[in-house]
Image (cartoon, rainbow, N blue to C red; front, side):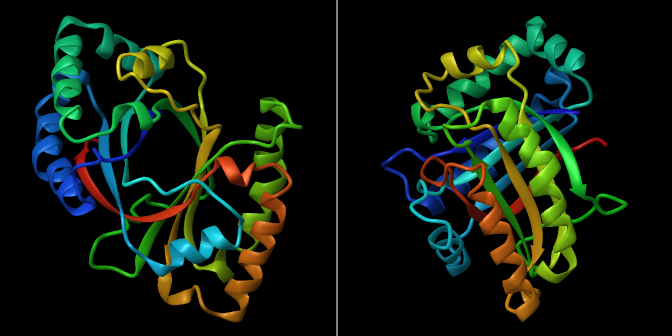
Length: 256
């Protein structure tokens, strides 16, 4: 599958609560109404939550970028299907309508957008772990940029072949129910997604995502696991140009 990853910053005149309310109750149904026109397989909003764990996770890593107000994600079964949907007349009309509404609540110049492919590392079967509002599970988002002394290829290789196994080895101790690496695809149409929104923010290399049981994150084993993660992250991640935050999921479309 291919997905659009869209970290969102709210318009400065909106509170986070008002931003998330509009996004969920006004924009979400609008996207859902274009499911067929855009041939969307899945659409999930992850709303950033105020959680002391976010500040602690950032402080443990250094001076990170401010967190986003949420992440919008849309999935398509194939890259070909994605291109066909966005290139059709119905898809273009739908895209224009959605962009018009985005301008009402999203700070588009400061909200990067890109397409990506996912690489499961710790994956439940069936894939039904969800960070519901009324649950102990949170979804951790970690949009990251690589260190300047590494090429993009070197950073991706290290992330997959060196860091991934470390996280997998500590998954049970850390309360990690699911962990995926989601790498930016560098597709040609990414430039258009950014340019029509006037985006001025450099896209990330990708993001790490994990679903974590918060009832298990304070154990001695979990603390050892986090220390191992962070120590290795500094080998390839530029923490000053990366960020990390916790969120709760709202599934708007799911046709899997």
